[in-house]
Every structure is written in structure tokens, then in C-alpha cells.
Image (cartoon, rainbow, N blue to C red; front, top):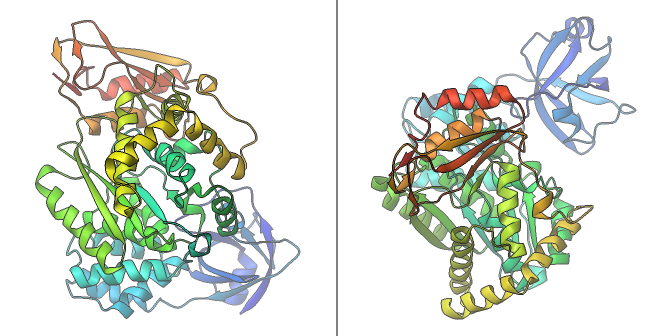
Length: 500
């Protein structure tokens, strides 16, 4: 083990595959080669990282630390970082075993999860493991072991001292428009339920709940922050990737992100591990299905059963909210546009998406009924009153301020991209469905979720009657080149993603 002086670099780095920079003389002195895996030990923390060799970025005796590391760990340029050369992780043998189709024990799976969490596996090794969730897949016993190991290798939150029901709502994702969850969190926490909601960034959608919320408030909270916010407000709206809640899962999400795909086994395990880590006892699981959703009609019963079975093994009550996905829940798709939708609901603006509002109320009522505190009908009436009275809006911003929001943002303050393009209908009739896959492609071409003001605003919803020439959607971007790219992706049939 050697001790090197850290140098914070103005380089972001890869969050899923951490890298550090060594001067060539330092590397030669200690026998480190380009691509070797190193163990790094900070004050009270450790992680793995891949060595990159340089002649100019850092001096001899120093180690270059990209922002992906120093934003996460307590790195001080006045301290020393202990560095140790790794051998090949023992869990690689278990990954090789799984690729061959053999069954893994809990101890083998836990070792893999630990090595992923500590970055002791290379991106290639992690990618190979991620691929085994597709083929050969995991049996029921392995699914349990994977879920337990994922949660056990991170922190476990405990809110039992606050008293009350610890609940949460979570969607499997893949469906554009993410305003439902924040509305539910505001409602449930106002009514006294404890709802420590953690969400992710978009994988298969144009924006995850986190991408939407960070246009309104800070969402990168520490464990201590979450405990404080929940104690103050009974709820939180935090980015799960900024915590050590099932950390191996967060890294695997980044590994899978370039392909925008996620197996059924993987997202079942991922969601349940996060709910265990968050200390939840009652969960409403949103399971949209359909031809252009993440889950097909043919598979919805199988996926629902997988959730029910695995949640039960961890003594968590779940209501699987199965619904056919015919299009986005709201009108806006993209961070700013989705944030505007959810604020319109809370502000009781006439432009609010009524379908999304009704969905949030229905889900929240089902979640309350699951706890047994009220029956569905009574819960729905109380929730409606809480929303109409403005109490939910005030509660939303109480959470926001507790998380560090400097000011209350109004929906009218949220402006979409300056560059626009209108999509006009070439057909007449009732809109039967929107192709969510194409919506995702278009919105990503426009720059979302990284360009916060980019996205699509639907002026017509499923069930509306349209005529030839009607404007059915408007595209927004921060540059004309993004508009051009999105239109090009439509392959000349601008409304081919709208089925009439």
C-alpha cells in the first residue's frame, strides 16, 4: 500500500466506472499499468478505480481524482489517499459460472454485489454480469438472494422512531411523463404518512423523476439530509443514486443506460432492493403495460406475480397497480414540461392534465387502503380535499424548502426551449394510442433529459377527436439542430406515432 497526495481534477469522469490518474513515474515505481484496478482508501471510505497513466495531468507522487469521485467521497488535497493494487476480484469466477448457466448461491451473489458496490470489477466484467439477467436469467431463489445482497451491501434507513405507516409509490418506468409521484408524495406526507421517496434518472424514458424534480429543488441528499427532511416533513423527494441505498444497483443502472434496456428480473430486484433500503413497509407498484410500454400485455401477469412474491418474502405489503399504457400520463414530456404539469396540478390551474391528476388520486387512495387506515372511498375524498384546498401545494414546497430550495417556483416560471416545431395531423378520427417508444426517441433527439427545457408538449390526448391539419404536439429544443434531428427521426411521417 502506498500513500499519494490527491489532486482534484476538473474532469467529470464516469460515475459507473471510476478512474484515477497516476503520473508515469509513480506508476512505474509501484508496478501499476494502464487499466489496472486500484483500491482507494479515504477517511472512513473505500472504493475501487481504474488506473489511467499520464505524463502531464498529475505530478509524480500525486493521484488525480476526477469529480465523479471527489463529489462522492471526502477527498481533501491536504490529506493522503492510500492506494493498493488489486488482483482479480474473486467474484469474477462466479460471474463466469453464471454466464455458463449455473446457479449461484447467496454468498456468491453477495460477493458480486459487494465488488460492484466497491468498484472492484471492471466495466466489462459488470456488463457481462448485467447481461446474465437476460440470459440465462435468475430463478426465484437467486432473485431473493440478489435482492437481499443488493440491499445488504448499502445503508438501510429506519423511520420507525417517527411513528406511523412507512409507505412509497414506485413505477417500473419506461413511460414518458413523471409528475404522478411528486403529487402523491405531497398528498401522503400531508396526511401524516411517512413517504421517503427516492427516484432515479431516466433509463428507458426521456426523463426520470429525478430529472424532473431537480428543475425545482435540490434532490442530491445525504443519508443525514433524508433523515432530517423526513423528520421535518414526513416525506422526501430524493435522488437514490446519490446515496448508498443498494449502491450496486445504481452502478448497474449506469452500465445498462447506453442501451436503454433493462430486463424484467433486473428491475424487479432493483425496485424491491431500494424499497427495503428505504425502510418501506407498504408500496404501491405502478405497472403500466402495453405494446409500447416496458412490459408487454403477454408478460404483465408474470411480472406482477414476481413483484408480489418477492415483496412478500421481505414482509412488505404491495398493491400492484396494473394499467394499460396508451400514452404518456401528462401533456409534457421532458424535465421542464413535466415539472410544469405537476405544478399545474398542485396549483389547481385550468391547464393541468386531468388524467394525471385522477391517476395520482386513485393511486394514493389505493396506497392508503393498503395500510388499512382508511377505506378507498374515504381516502379518495380526503385526498381530493387536500389537493383542492392548496394544502398539497404548500406541503410540496415545505418538502422542497427542507431539501434546500431557495424559492418557490411557479409553473408560469418554467419556460420550454426557444426552438419549436409543430406536429400537425395528417388524418382524422379519435386518438387511440401514442407510440411511447417513438416519443422517447424524439424527446431524446431533442436533447432531454440533459437539456432540461427540451421535450414534447401534447396538445391532444388519447380519446380526443382530431381533424386533418390539427396541431397535436409541439417540439421544444435549445438549438435548431436538435429540432432538425428530431424531425429527421420521424422518417418523414410526422404523426406516425399517433394511432387513430
